[in-house]
Image (cartoon, rainbow over all chains, first blue to last red; front, side, top):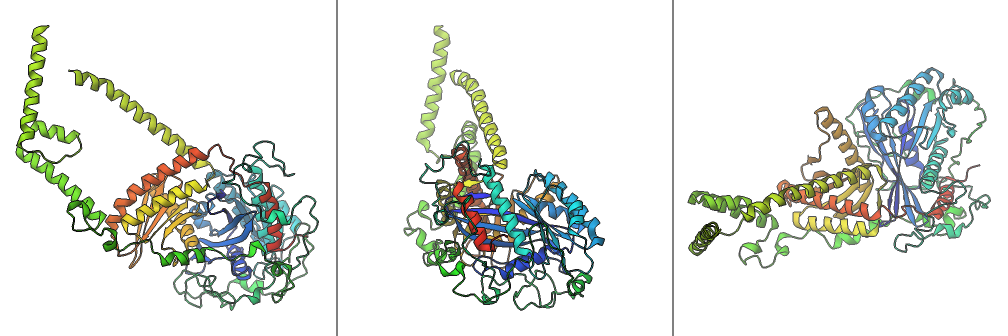
Length: 433
Length: 195
């Protein structure tokens, strides 16, 4: 479920890549991690088995930038595709906002695609979600295989709700970002619908409630720059998206992938120094991997969202519209700076500085934990002393009341007097009546 | 005699009040489980104050509040050296997996998890059935001390979240139409325009 945080001005969405085993879900994330701008993605975390199969999930945070004053973040997850890991697949789907179903275009694997799609519907239902209601995109992957099923045929077998379809060769990056864009649009549209806006952008009720609240209303930074969306023509000519210049991105400590594993688990990729969390195995090249290297066949023209959207790598030039003007979406993450200044004023105080007058008796102990310990000890000694004195009436009172410091002889005399007075009073009452 | 009679009257009252409060709390939790999590400045300020107070007393390194889906809500303390986004996602995953283990054992879920490392340790506790508070601490404090104050922390955070949920339930949780428009443009800028 989309989390909206007005305090930090953030919107967080969860997108899950689903599909049968070895269909290319992790590859999708790897490509996004490789080609997205360095300041937009975080670490790619992968929990994988020795044989490089996803064991639990892969995780990649993607920062879209500031949208209408709200920093919009997508958290991309993949699931393990193998049938055996059904329980973990269900867990990853928990609270997701959109699903990308990655299908293998190999006709021999169509049964697995269908089985996985059915499994997705079941797991979503068990998480209280409806596959027909959730934003979803179908990605027909591995379109470069020598033998692929036609788009129409795959649509007929898999597309049950007129979901957007993207053709992809994830290993090359083709179609990866169109898929991500399509699902992002779906998630945002749904968020909009949930707030009561219809597709024309009209909100029948409660529309102005937020606008009146100065404290919570986000500042519309981008909407001013692009005022009228319905009438908005083709956006300012931005043929080169933010992914158009992958080679310009140098290795950065922030984006260096955290897939902790020794080299050799995966063919070394010069662009992503990625290592998985796995012990050292030796992996033989898979049949699909070799199939991917086969010369690509002529691809049929897509009837849906055209593939091959990822532009060819061109050096980041100052003429590219995305980079020429100060774009609010491209601001670096402020968190680093914020916490850099924070580190200068540490929150954790040394115990000595916390309570300066430490010598001042019990209550001024240097450590709060010791205070508490002393308190507990005094309570327990009180109770034991009372039971040792054999004063039953006092014990009964003490067990029901908050522990009090022990009174001396005078207190006992007063209590005894009070008891006698009470007895006398009740006797006088009965006698007089 | 007088005290006794007063006691007889008072006891059922107290039970009813207590029972009523408990029922109300459970009802709110049920609604919370289904509602979208929206945090306003006042909520986060309150949570931050509670976390800071906890860190001050327990001497832990940092504390994060995350939701069960793995999104970070807020953080306090020394977090610069940690990738908090990844920690949030992994902790939520770990908690979800442990919940399944708990169910295999006949429990609903484990409300507290603890991972011990050589230098750093993590204490995770469930808050209001909807969020998790993650405490990272090292040898400057002890597990006992963290657990002692984490119980209180969990209770205070639960109360705070319930209060904020009550406060915000009638607010318009939306981000405005301008967000959808701007998001369209931002997606075009980010991914390139769709043909």
